[in-house]
Image (cartoon, rainbow, N blue to C red; front, top):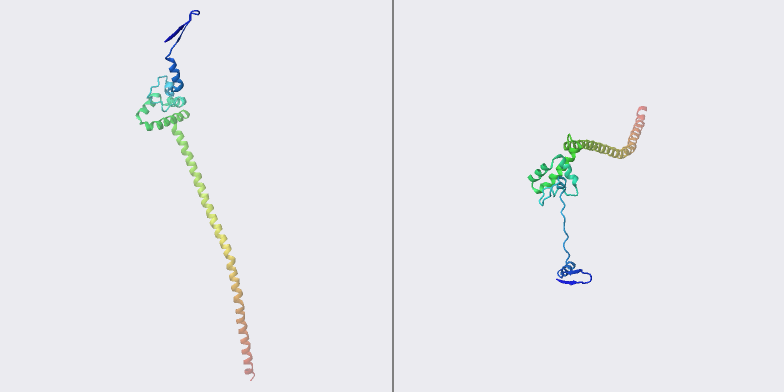
Length: 201
């Protein structure tokens, strides 16, 4: 180290030469940011130290304390920890979600809890099935009515054609009949004229 002393003031300024390269190194390569790990919501509420491998930390983050508070009021912290330790890690997240849902349902309905919500949903499903069956029956009825209407329209469209054919047949057959009757009448008259001389004799 190098030192400089001022006799008039009696103060001593000490300059460390080793600090100069350190400042240069700070300017060239910045130090990594320090990550401060906050305790999980469970450990914060329980007022205990959150260890590195806390079983509750992955599922109860510090920014959502209500999640653990709800589950803790119904199941208790010791039971939650016991449940999670007995399960493999891939199933723990679903287990926590189920416990939180059950706890919310139990707080809303202390008597039936989650079973009450399931019963209510089942009643809604039954009502919707009844409405669906009614709608399907109405649809079948409308389809049947439409089929009958189309059949009636087709019959009305074909009926005038049949009537026209019958009228045409009537006109075509009538002159022939009159001709036959006229011919028969003339033949009878001729026969009568031929027989008259015989009677006169």
